[in-house]
Every structure is written in C-alpha cells, then in structure tokens.
Length: 601
Image 1 (cartoon, rainbow, N blue to C red):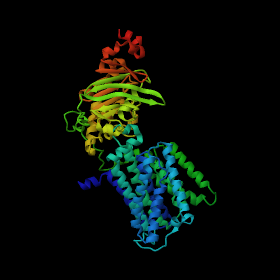
Image 2: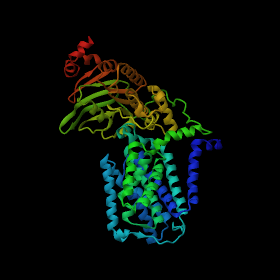
Image 3: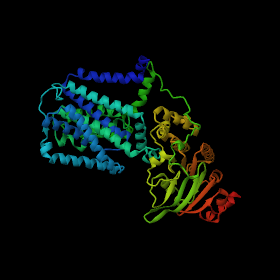
Image 4: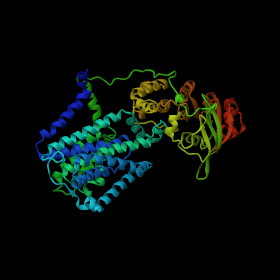
C-alpha cells in the first residue's frame, strides 16, 4: 500500500523536485552560482512564510523586515555578547518575533485595506530608525560583524554547501507546515477571511484570532530566515536587514509566483531572484540602473498578463502531464453520507444559549440605532417563536438591514436590548452569535469567490465539526439539500446569481443555526427562480429552523410568512398575520400602494 501511494504522480513529482533540489549543492561547483541558489531558496522560504498571512490570510504586510531583523539581531547579539550558539539564538529570536507580532498585530488588524498596509510600513520604518540610533546595542549604521570561526555550534561553515542544505531544510519545513495548514480548519478560515471578512464572521470564524495566529506563525519562520542570513553573510546592519525593499521582495515572490498557493512563492523566487542577479551582473556596471528598469518592466508584464501568478499558467499543463503518467488516480470524492442526527440540517439546540425559559426564540425590546443623529432603527420591538417564519418588509432605507446587523452583532444598539433564548446578547460579536445558533445571509452576496463551492460550505461546517472529514461530510449533505451538488467543484465566483444565492444559504446552513436571517435572497431572480427559492426556504423551516426574511416580493412574503413586521423610517408601523398586514391602511400608504390592492384583485 505504501509503495502504491509513493508511486502516484501526485507524490513522486514533488518527490523528484525535492531530490533535484537536494542534489543541487553537490552538482553546482561555482561558488557564485551556489550563492545565487542559496539566496533564491532563502527568498522562497521567506516568501512562503509571508504567504501564510499575506496570501492565505489576505493581509498585505510590508513590515515583515522587522521579524527578519529581530531574528538576525537576536542571534547575533546573543552570540557576540554571551557566546550563545546561534542555533539557540535562532529559536529565541523566532519566539521574540512571535511576541512582537502579537503585540503589534492586535491593534493593526483593526485597520483594513491600505490603512493596514501603511501601519505595517510605519512599523518597519520605526524599527529601522531605532536600529540606526541604538548604537550601543545594534552598532548603528556601522553594523555588527561576526568573526569567521567555522564550527557547527557557531553556525559558521568553511564552504557554502552546508548553508545550502540548511536553507533547503528551512524551505521544506515551511512548505510542510503550509501544506498541513491548507486543508485544516485554519487554512479554510484564513482563505475565507481573505475572500470576505464579514462573510467569514457570520460563519462563526473569529477573524481577529486567526489573523493574529497566522501573523505569529509567519513571523516565526521569517525570523528563522533572518538568523540564517546573519550567519551566512556574517555581517548585519539596518540598511541591509531592516529595509522596506526586503519586505516588498518577500511579498513580490509570493504575488508573482501565485499568492495563496503552496508552490507559488517557490516559483516566484526561482523566477525573480536569478533574473535580478543576472541583470545586475550583466548590465549593472555598463548601464547604471538599466537592470532595474528591465526588471521592473518584466514584473509589470507578469502582473498584467498573469494576475493570478505564474502558477496559474502552469497549473493546467501540470495537471495534464500528471494525468498522462502511470499510476495516476484522480482525487477521490467522498461519497455522500449522513452525519449522525435526526435531521439533515441538524440545529444548534444541543448547544443552546442558557435555559431558554421563554416560549420565544428571539425578543427585541425597544431597540434603537442612530447614525449621526438619524434614527436608522427607532424603538422597535417584536417576538419570534421557535420554528416560525417572520417577514420584515418596508421601503428602501426603512432600517431592515440595520435591524439584521443589530441582531447579528455587526452594530451595537444605542438603546433597548435583544434577547436570544432568554438571554441578552448585547456586545456579542458576529462569530460568537453564529456559534450560539444565529446565522445570516447578506443583501449583496458574499461568496468566497476564489474557493470552490464545496470549500465554501466546508468553511461554514467547521463551526460545529471537530474534524475535516466530518466538516466535508456535512458540506456534501448541505450542497445536495440546496441543489448545488453538481456544482461542488466549481469556483464560487463562476456561479450564476441564483447559484450564489443558494451558496449563501448553504454556507449558513452548514453552521447548523437555530435562527437564520435571510436578507433579500430573491432579489434579481426571475419568477421560476423565486419559486424554487421559496420552496427551499419552506424546506429549511420544516427542518425546525426559525427564519426571519427581508423581501420585496410581496407574493412570496404573503404566502411564506406566519407573521410580518413593517418598518418605515426606522419605526415599526404594523405587525401581524399576512392578511392583516395586506389590509392595513398605514402599510398600504407607506409601502404597498394602491397598485398592490388592484393587482391582488
């Protein structure tokens, strides 16, 4: 069995690649070429470390030079001042980098987009200035030199070959960690928050925790690279190891090769680093600076014509090659199987929030929310029983989605309270409320576009599932239930609008909610698609899930809901059964209009 597995193309091609990499230090006789090999592999390792937070986590950090510098300075200072072996200094520097990453990352992750990027640049520049001016410790601009005393305990060798094997080992270690992470809970969660952070939160993902964990792991491996560089060059200074250009290079090898992929940073490094060295060596002297222009032009062309990275261009050809080799076996698709439980859509009742002493699942009492003095929601109150379908209607801007955001924890109420299963949930964040049994969709669909349909739902299933096999099995069930089983291997962004709407519901259903909030899941659909969506919502409700739905299609609302609430200018103007609402003069005047009465006949 072992040998059958070993001789599958999916295994032996990477194995052959690793074998070639291991033989390279022996085959390359030129010290200069071997130096390029070592630097190339080092950048592949640094790019792979950066890719954990920048590629999988989607957080574009340009301050990673700090962790590189911490690793270099920690091991070097401990060696020079206390005689501590750099092997131990390497680990101490790595753990120090993790601590610094946690301290700096926690407040920085409150920022998004360019503001987060700027904060990481500022962090790197501050550390650069500190290193220049703290001369008694860092040596300032003069730097620190390490005496050449070859010995294993000193992490100093008389030839470049040992350095080559050490950096190969570092790269293999990082790639092994990334490979294990990619198909774990953390890998799914990081990919989900990269694609859409709000969409990840409503699946029970603590985005702050996983971003911080990814940054700490990334900082750990980047710091190891810093120590290796210091011991390889035997000299460090702030202008070499604490520069913005170093952080940019770490990011570029990942972006050019293929961000968010295992092999992408390796491909990017083996493309960029030798190219840069070749241009510098051949053109740098005769035509000062022209190598930078050519290098930059090549990078621009790669970004324009290969926006997903070089790996995207070679992936299809690689799959074709693998499929033609002996021993090829397509990825096995797990058979559809039931997760133990009485219902396909097992709810979170087993993890109920408190004793649930009241007959009401959800109680909203005198709820208000103001934005700049404008009341988006004003003194709204209602009660929702278990297994009911409650409709929420009203004109655009009436406060319907704001009310959903208050219930789900995206907004904090300015007044009033929300009771879920008899307990006040004010102050609970979206991921906590999801874990307690409240799920929601968004008015504008938020699929994880670059993940497969199946992986989208697996990310939601991890809210309850302890293991990957259970999460996958639950995701398979849900996809069959919502009618997306045939599309399970498609990239989510390639789905049609109705498919994306169903995927939104599938992701939330995978978290096994007791209460699901549906925000205009029929918007943009034709009559047949609306009918199919209505049937699906009824099936969901029949499984014991309570539903609260915002919708503008009145025929659906009137036939689907047990009770309806009408909002106008943030205030509740009516509540009751569909028949009562359809005949309420205030509702007709504010929302339905006389045309509705005429159409109803």
